[in-house]
Image (cartoon, rainbow, N blue to C red; front, side):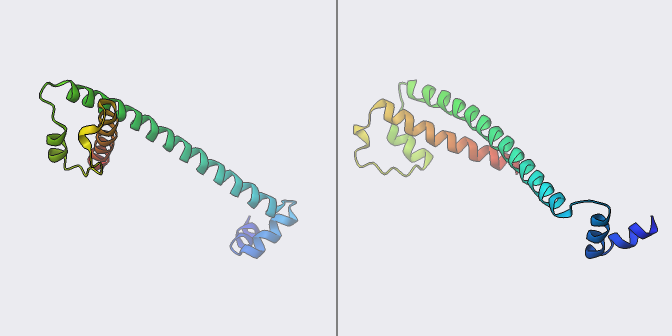
Length: 122
């Protein structure tokens, strides 16, 4: 046991020891790195899946919010643009269809709610 401890303290000696025991060190390292990469990819995929689920949930909330907002009799897009401090790049905002406005507002509120959620988590 003492010999193994001494030989494992030096990388070169450890390689020689493992090789003398019949271990293919290069293959072991390669397999280990592949396994690490695979585990990282799985973790990243799970994280992405969770983020997508969270963003879909928030998009649904934003959609509900926008639909309620647009259903109000006193809804005013120019007032909302001012209140939300939106930068509007459309010159003819008054010519947008109701569906165009809905899509734009859903995107805006989805991003806003996502940012609020991130701020609350920090």
